[in-house]
Length: 176
Image (cartoon, rainbow, N blue to C red; front, side):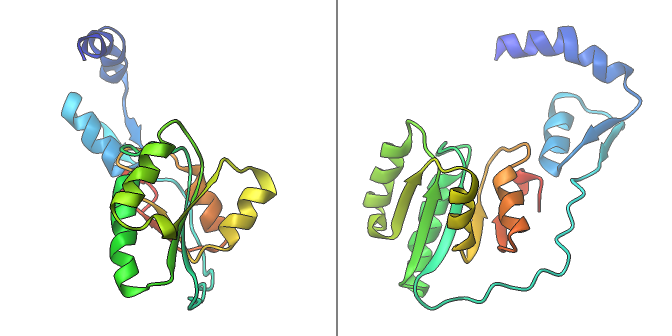
C-alpha cells in the first residue's frame, strides 16, 4: 500500500495534474479515480458496444445453462457470488447448470464451495478452452454471467454478446 502511494505521488499524480481531460471507461474507474485524485477533469466515455437487435435466445426447459468464461479468481471475478446465485436459481429452475470455462490454482477451492452450497452436481468445470472449442461451449449457454468486482475489459462478455447470448454483468465490468 505504501509503495503504491509513493508511486502515485511520484509518477501518476503529475500526469493527472498536467492532463486536460482524464478518460474513464466505466463508473467504477470514475469512482476509483475520484477517491485517490478528486478532480473535475474526469470524463466518462464508455465502450462503444451496441448489441443491436439481436433476437432473444429461447429458454430451453432442460437444462438451463448459465455460462462463465475467464480466469478462476474467486473474489475478483465474483465466482463466490455466482455460486450463491446458482443455488438460488436451482430453487426456481431445478434443471439449471453453471458451466465454468477457465482454470487456475483456485479451482479446487471453488469446487469445494460448490459442494458446500449443495450445487456441485450442477456445476461443470471445463478447464481452459480456446478458439472454436470455447465458442462451441458458449453457444450452448442460455445466459452468460460475469459478476466481477473489479474489471478492465472482460473480453469473454464481448464474445458471448457477439454470439447473441444475453449477458448479466456487474457495474464493475464497465459493460453494463
